[in-house]
Image (cartoon, rainbow, N blue to C red; front, top):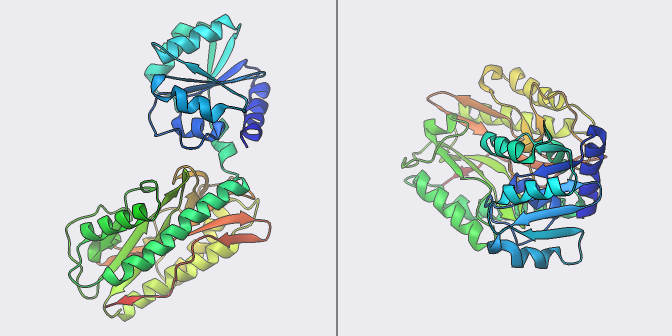
Length: 362
């Protein structure tokens, strides 16, 4: 698994003419190594890839478990006893590396330290690992699908609790606790539970507001299984929906279905976005959909590819993306319906299976 990822990085390295590539982003390190059950998000590691070797530098807290994970792989694990980047730069100089590339996400202070200690030519490069990550291997898709299935079960669990008097904060806690008990490694992101006027805020913060009869309630949440995320949004009505609510919901659902239908390999993200946006505009809500239609999901809940009005790059076969149109009426409420899909030769395959029918809760 790791070998194909390394080959892709080495191709970019060879094209650049540089001698070595240093990876500092914890998510990219976890992806490149393919190690499972090792990383905890701590910024305590660095990877060096050159034409002949792959090395990961870490400290005593992780050395034993990382050495076990690396056994039988192409990775050499190096224990750092003092400063990680001083050790790394000393090794680079000793091995004759003259030109170095660094991820553009590297912190400026770290960039300066590496540049000064290394002494040779240092170039910052953008997206070398992230672009590889956007095409998922079958095992990655399976993990994302498992996280999506857990989110579906969570939605079924929470529905009976969406009643008059329920509190946003309490529902968000219930979502998180259920996902963790069912096997989620934490949550993909802090859940959004937004009721009434709060649902008009695309990324509303959870509050102490209690649900009232006639509220829209927007639920946006995701699980994390074996290092991979899911992302799903459903919107329900507490009690009976009004005619206006039905019209808004119908527009968003039509846009969701149109966006999914537009997904094909090598179709630009802005073309997919336009298909959904046109449906919302046709219902008279064009000015009330202000964000992009979707984004990639994988080891992070927001990654490549982008699906929005300015996304001119195409989605690729094997990408996992969200389709999440919304209509948001300030002071009144909003609806978002978000599905997770994998891009395949035949189009989009749904990974989210919770109903999208308008639900009116007790």
